[in-house]
Length: 235
Length: 260
Image (cartoon, rainbow over all chains, first blue to last red; front, side):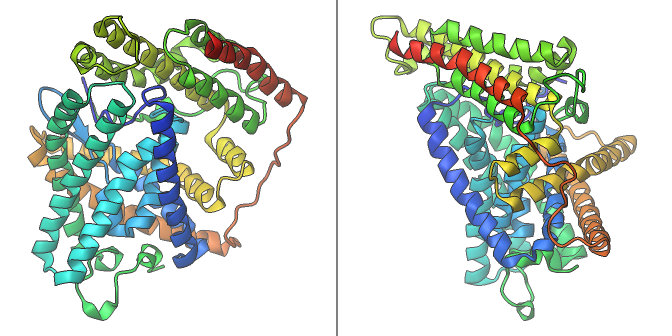
């Protein structure tokens, strides 16, 4: 029962005004670009599909697993979203999820929304997009190598989010940097393992069942360049 | 297994008397009013306790006007407690960590406690005000208000569809977890989370085909990329009074704290 879960939803008042503003600007920039990609590459009428996939991410975040000492972590899904939708649509979908958690569930502060979107959505999605996209372009990995990369990236995405959270809280004077970093990265190193195991399981199963739905890292060169429109590709 | 302890679906939706004056306010008025209370609290430096008290009083008045019960408020607000605890853990370290707020000769240990108290007050006020928005305003109405406040339409549409299917999909994931548990799945560490990956896949594929079906069903009913709005929003006198009273009672106090 004592689910510590990811202590990543920063509430109101934990961030200084400056940090809240800077993270909000970065998040708005990423989401704005995501909206551009959606409007450009996605048939507007297929927006409902993105909504359903946002609900999927929200529900998948309820998958929790034991971490250590009676605490548990839960699935975050930024890497999975980036693999399935491409990084920019993943930013958009993760932002909708996190904003809904703030507005409908009071989880995560409205003034900390920018930071939460950055830590739990944008950083992970872009990291996955850049790393996996570059790897696929550079040496077109086989299925096994791709899944290994997905594992590493999804673990890293959780760590980067935890590190960003610690740094933002420390710069705001809420927690001391060193001990917060040690504590957060220690716990999230384990949570990241769960994230990696779930993400790899999910990606490998989607690759087997519906490879056409994987936006990042296609294996058949015949299907053309990986493109974000794959999110709504097969109606 | 605690199960679906985070974002339990009972912790969202309207509460209180849906016919109350607060429930009937325009969503824009409630968004502006309640977010202003949060911003006033969050922007107030520690030690200006009267401002925090005024914010809390304003929220209590909103709750009473809306007849939102204490039980509902408590159940939804307590999500913030573990996070305050998280900060509390670090208070002893702030003695050496230093450089919190420049308090001069005061012992840093006290600075740590001050940080904790301010953070706890702000986080509680912020969470309470979001809870009151959620208990007095349906999520579609919040979105409708945000759209009228120029939030990009694509974003609003995605959020609206997400909320519409959230309950179905969350219940689906709950059934899948139950199925796993009834077959003896009791993961003891993160490495045993693989089965959850397969749950995620099945959920994704089902959600995806549900999305496709929904989209086709909508097309066949004449969907052209925008949802018709059944009830147009209108700002009335009550809405203006609400926002004006909130701002008039908090902003002067907040400015006074700046001078003090």
